[in-house]
Length: 269
Image (cartoon, rainbow, N blue to C red; front, side, top):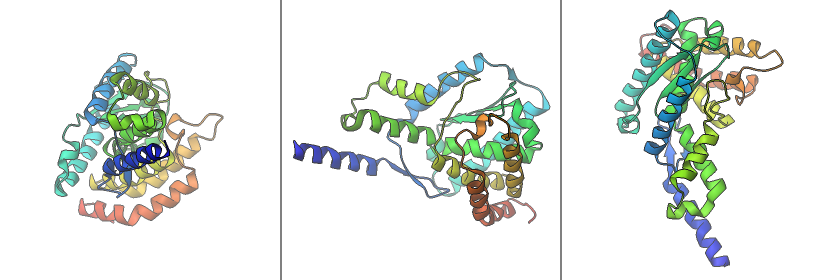
């Protein structure tokens, strides 16, 4: 039995090594065991159901900003991935950007590029550049496969060695997905871990800069967000985010590289 347990343990380690994915922008390595196509199909269904229960805004200046800024950052990311020969990583993404009429200070992105922004965040974003901080961050969650990472962690925690024989059923995977992405425009979606949030900060900073948005506006945006959290209940957008001092220090550390991307995109330093 001890030999069998040792074999299973070594096998799981081997599977984890094989399933390790390296982020081409940050260099962070993550475990992504789940099938991306299956996750994206479930995300699309969940996204559609969430939007069906929400008041989606279209045609307004805010709605147009969400689409335009989102597409600009998405295009910058696509160009970057193409330039390093990894365009295939995101070839199956079907990007969609929607504005939801809701006072909540929130925004989120699901696997495969399904993004939502709430009207309640606009008093804090103030400008398209502020919105670019938000969308760069959320688009980064999708590009980095943070949904797959979270689901993979849950798979290992709940089923352990069962993943070796691919014995996890579609129903079991769907149950894990439901835990990660509950339905509803009002609920707390996408509870990422601290390391994932910090990576989305870093990656989002680079992406907004690649798209020609001044990354130096990220610090003022997060300061405004912190001010909004001074009440009894912080914005959902900050529910699992790092503490302000950690975020400020990380943004400062990554700013020189972000400014290089900004200058390459035609920005003035």
